[in-house]
Length: 411
Image (cartoon, rainbow, N blue to C red; front, side, top):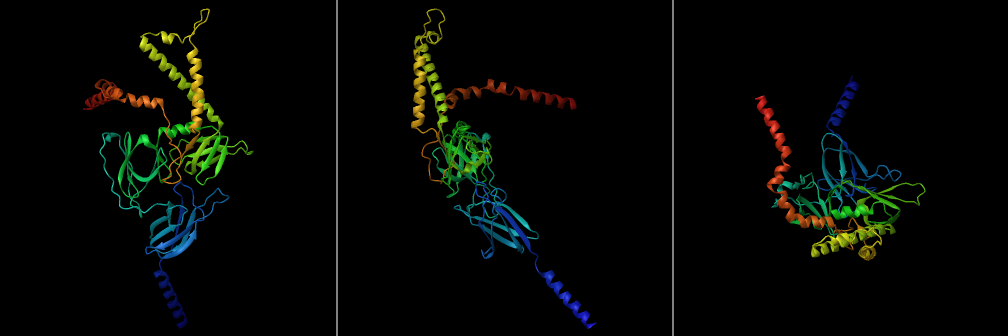
């Protein structure tokens, strides 16, 4: 009996100790760069709130250089408040605070964010408030804002900011480094994207350069200074982490290579770009001839200048083609020379550093856009006139009238 009683006492003591011991859980997550690329073999440090190191590990490596990677796990973690620090190759490391309560947790995707001071969203005066679009700045644990943006102007100067609002012609923002509020005209902006690689604004110049690059040959210079020649290139039009596909005739497997646009510094097209110069030169010549003939018609108050360009089929055939056969070839050759001199074949994308400008301005002139802007003083009063508004709202009035009839019938 004494032996049995002793065994029961020992079992009760062990059970009490085990019941009082805190349960332990697992913590896992995945590390990404701002460009949404997984961070492989980076040091991950688990600390308490006093930054005392509890455990260390490394993010996983991709399998076959393609699958997985960037993951980390800590086992046997007691309930409490902790901090994870991941050493990245960027200027800013990943710092994330979290709490373990009564179960294992997955902290999800972690990105390198700067510690940001307390931020208060500012209201800006605007005549276009009905078209203003606000961006969420709800805070998350360990950070006083939810998301930051990168504004890149046409000269390649980049700024890390918090975009407050976007109106018709301007973007209002708060500088992430000093909390100064400012604005930038859309005419001076190349593009804007956020920490998650989502473009919230692409300028017309940016879109035009991508359209001119589509399906051409040339080479890419990446952020790490690597160079890749291609025989064909294709840009996605997605706003969320767009990719760039390149095709290579020298590759016997005929495989397409995909690249993140955030890894690309410069794309320079090959000889195929001459076709673009020829097309632009041709239309420049057409516009010039049209302008000259229109001016002659206005001065003479006659349509004869236009008729002189029309073919005369009565023998002997005579017509004034000298202007056409001279101006168009000259403008075409001039455009080819101009594009070569101005290096129009070079297109810059992601700046290497915030204060490292492009070697040239990325603005692309658009005649139709210029005409539209110049015509606004004439067009806007017409659009805002009572007659045009009355005509535009005719469908709305019809719907309101039918709704009123149904309501009166139901009463």
